[in-house]
Image (tube, rainbow, N blue to C red):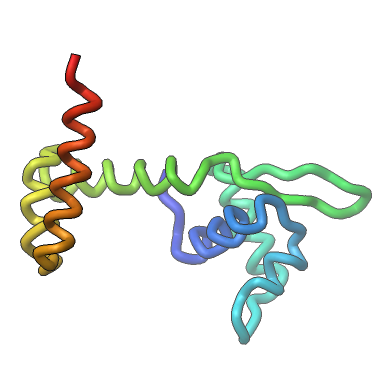
Length: 123
């Protein structure tokens, strides 16, 4: 699932709020606030993508996310690895550790995390 920048911004608010009415979403935006029609259009697209759904309360709709932030982020990273690194997580890790200019401490933290994951996978 690929969301536009505006859709991702709405998802961020929904992940924080867990459920929100359109007025809550508009209020969450910094000034200048988007038009209600813009937010409604984005929400409709997000429903079509199965990213959000809503409950009806009277004449109002309470929107909620259908995908967790972690699951969405995981999908995006996997897509980036497939698109830019031919599906190789090793090439991605090599690029990530060199291109981001990680400090020695950050690299050591990363090593500890990798070591922990290796331990989990041992029989």
